Length: 307
Image (cartoon, rainbow, N blue to C red; front, side, top):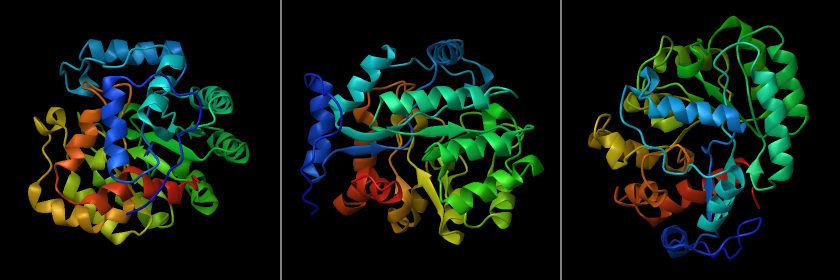
């Protein structure tokens, strides 16, 4: 068992019952905390629009009821994650049209400067100037990128992005990509476009969000064939997702075998259940403490060099 003792970065608020449950989870595994590679921080007016869309049950969420659990202000949300013992997290933000990505990257750089436990996050869109502003973000210290194929409605193999993927592959900067067809399909979601992308850029450090739900087995296959492909657990195995996009139990041995390339993601704050539920959902898979330690901390610590 790993014998880590470090505390999470930044001020930690008084431990609530919910935070106590999360901290008990990782302490029981002998971990120093969690690393969550799929959390959302973005400009407040943008985040409020996202929440309004969820409240309205828009088509991109499949028209489902999706109550947001954590509607606190930004400072309170970062304090919540620290209270949970999340040592490092991301600011997954994404454009839905041209002209947004560079502006979002500017905001995210500022957020990372004032939030030392956030992995500096950036984003992109297939548009003129994308190679320039992606290079600038990398040179400014971006440690992870977010690509949202469903919301952005673009093909990840778009020719305008070819130099960008090459740049990120060369720099070794991971990309968290929402490319599965859940909770609702898009024009370019699914394994096909990603397979074409990886054929061109096999060294791209791609993290498939949500385990690629609902095309879980197809994306497991891509990870099995490409050693730099990883998957995050965001919303997978929760009661909510299992209700309409269940993970096939026959594929659990394959997920277990990829235990060194699966990373914890939560979708905080945009989840319709409390944070501990994602952790318990992973625990009840029965894949063992070593698998949980790797997924909830050690894999991301190695990938992002979190000491």
